[in-house]
Length: 303
Image (cartoon, rainbow, N blue to C red; front, top):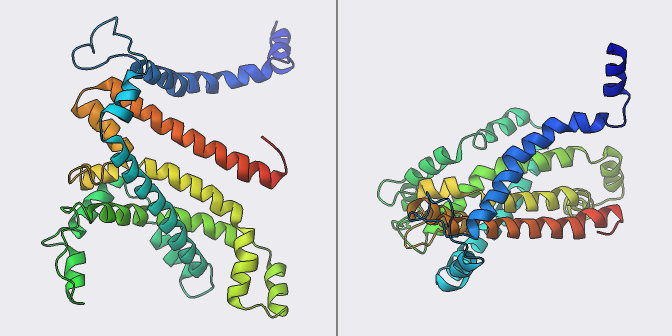
């Protein structure tokens, strides 16, 4: 009996399915079911008046149409989201690369300093948001205090519709620079030494080596980081909420913040989940574009 059981488990073609079963059950319980239930909520009228009903009214795409067309806020908030995401991706890549290129050089304590930079990344976004809220305080903030030495008058960073978005972008860039730095550093240290030596022998300048050798070789890492930065920027809810709660006057409200407000402030779960699904669709499209034009292109395959 034991021999038959052993043969069934270890020698059967179905063994792989048994081994995958725990992972499939976990994914079904914590990924697929929430996604399906989220879609169910988005096509029904689920608010404070219908939340406890067994048969909630089916409204189809009405929740989607309301947030996109009828609310009047979609274009402004989508514009805020675009500004927030593009700015974060640009500055995180540029500054992360600059830090990586600096710390990959051999100098005293370069490894220790690289580790010190990572401290900010391991901090919870809520804590980072709280710290930056005090740093950008219009009256007693350190940034205004530092700017006063160069003759810059007090700036109401988080109380102004003009500067609030700049403030949350600075905080989010600071939070995610270490992640970009460490991945770019790993790509830089994997560049073959003989390539560097050959370029030096050929008389290439530092800028030429950077432009013609370093950047092309780490391009896959930079492209993957760009997509990850987009995804992480959409996860900037905790930071923004702890700094401005989407204000003033929705100037720092991005799509995830709007989804939260609709769901937990206005108790309109249908519209909140519709916004969450819109975010999911946007991220899926971005991921597919990346796979189509960069992953398969690098491998010489077609999607």
